[in-house]
Length: 405
Image (cartoon, rainbow, N blue to C red; front, side):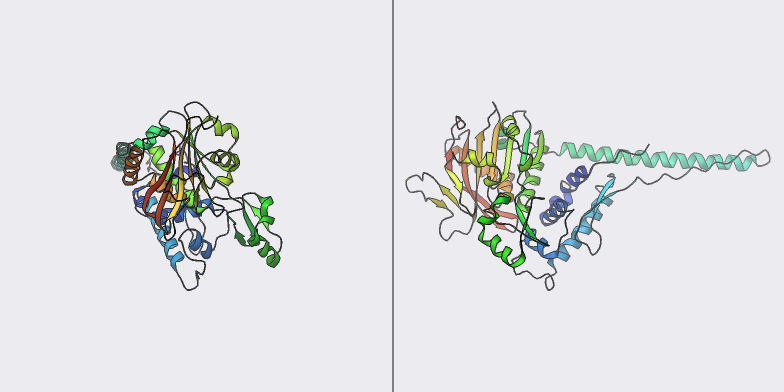
């Protein structure tokens, strides 16, 4: 009987959690981006801007960065499926000359046929030799299969023994035995033929008329069509980071998009929301009751009620760090929690909440500010593309357990 085929998500998770890809964040970002957009027609320019952090004047005709990264990713995928992922029957590959990710179903190597010889009264000696050959062949095949199975079991045991313990920060918040749903936005894009654009202040297709940039393009290129088919790269990377940390720590997880984020789910389970609040009316309504909020550009954090000597917004003049908000709030159902990572660089916020170094600093910061059960903090981060260099909390507010009342 052939082995059961793994589903596509199982293969993606195995690749992302492998040792070789854990050490290559740029390859992880590119793989996730190609995965999220595997049904779309991609060009080098889009990949350069969305994944590799290139400037708007990036020219793929003179800059081979995308081709180099794509070639490296193709090689790393090949190496993974030749080593760590050799037991998987679903493979990921990038065809030469293409910018798309292909998912292939492969079968297990066929076992060699065992030759059979008929008994002959005149060639009894040859029959005996043939029987011995068959027996040796069968034993060799069985031995090979046992060796492979033992190696697979050893790898599974080693993987299990090496699973990290859930960080104390997350154990305190989500270690309640309830299902945790990680939700990422499906923001509104507008496409003019092959050109896709987004105004971060627009979160509903009917708001196109409210965007001067969209209207200017419409006068040049014609009427735009709304498009909500995939998430932005930063949110997808944040999803991968938190899924790895929480799932390996034993937290029961489900993932979804804002378009599937019903009010029923919002009040029943633990929720981790990633992205800018206006993409979810439930989240935006809740955060209207807190003290920190993002400005219309989503690049600054404003304080509704600044404390004495505290600035009214972040970052301060001359501070080039990216800012975002981490909110740990009570859920609507008893015992549930709501964690919101607000900002345009949610991948940096997720890394901040996944690194043992920054988590230790965060625990110290919370203890110094009274260790509130529920709180919101402003986090300032230095990033290189999607890589987090440094991050620190710079403002905090305790949140009342009666926030919903």
